[in-house]
Image (cartoon, rainbow, N blue to C red; front, side, top):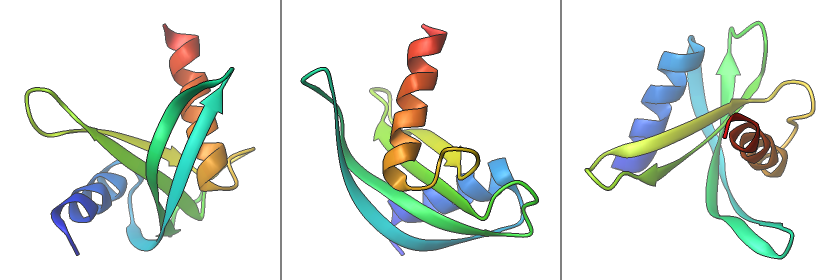
Length: 97
């Protein structure tokens, strides 16, 4: 397991508890109104013992000062895939700005 994936696994476990197992990496290119708003990979984790979700989707962007800005999205409600997790995260960021 590389450092990036190890860090994501650690954060998923911290934020969402229990056990998290990496399942797959999905390449996502999300375009909104003709602009690419996300072009990268999303890591899919299986969750054990989480009462809310069986999946968690996670990705990170490097911070200018070092380290990672990590996003995690639980697979609940309309979040049923890596693609829908990215859409949900984008919508959340737009609603908070």
